Image (tube, rainbow, N blue to C red):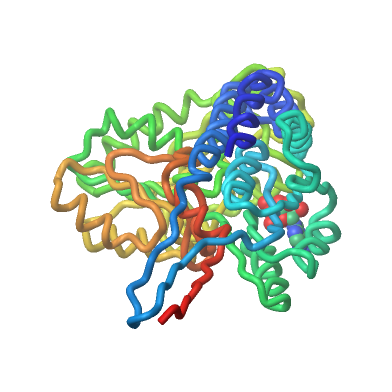
Length: 410
Ligand code: ADP
């Protein structure tokens, strides 16, 4: 625990350098990268201070027996992370695994791995014993596959695409080990006609623009009660119109996307969209022509069954979908293959609870939304969004196994 907290301090000490490195590597605005380093450090603080607070249980059993249920590390845990938040992901997945006493092997994404290497070097400075934290860079299909298929790991945690998630789970099955998968989403924010629109607006926009929409928990669908459709879409349009994609150090609303491949993917959605464009931001003048910039775009009304209503774009594209009543809102919100996060905007307390319970996903926000943050909050999905829970104390349970020790002293 002390080592983890020390690493958190070192990340804080180096935060500005790390943020610059993350921005240069990933293309994200420097303000976002700075926030990422605060979160990365916080993971180590949180799990460092939790390391000695995971208790076992005593189970009442037959006369003459003492039974205790303890949590033990798996041994060696494998971790494969994506390129969207490398430093944060490093903290999110390694800190709880280490706190439970595992040794860890992490493979960062080939598109952005620099901060993970830098933080691994800081871990050495913090005093972690050799072998506790290993970072192995390489191509997914080579190094990632080798790690996931290795007989040397006892558990694997993966964050990335559903397609690769299937490969990871298959490899885990072959080795008879467990895995957690966090595979993205098509998360809805539902705005009812009694919502505080001024409070909701910055969050509705921020949840899709943050990190250029390249966030698993991006709020990529906004479900709008028909009674406020005109008003809300007009207000959203005004905000979207002022968004600027700019080079990382110019600190625009968003930066460049991660790669040519990702830009092509997002542009594919834009060119094949079968819904009207309500508003579009712009790419900053002077942004390099060959940069992977995409103007943020608001579509609506979007058919909930169409690709824009169903598929994860992983870019700055928001689909506005009208609904007529609460039942319809719930139906549309739940009707994708994903289920990660949902946001509910209403002042009606009964409705807040009803709709939160009806959401088929792992995390629900009422009159708010958190794409990414919230170290303390258990997080994860169902179906195509994956399974298992990260963050909070839940992650400590994921990265440990239960052993039941039965003592017959009768
Ligand atoms: P994206 O399409 O967003 O890049 P991926 O799922 O391809 O998402 O990548 C997420 C992580 O998975 C990266 O670290 C990548 O290198 C890794 N990866 C990709 N393919 C494989 C694979 N076949 N086996 C294991 N890891 C992989």
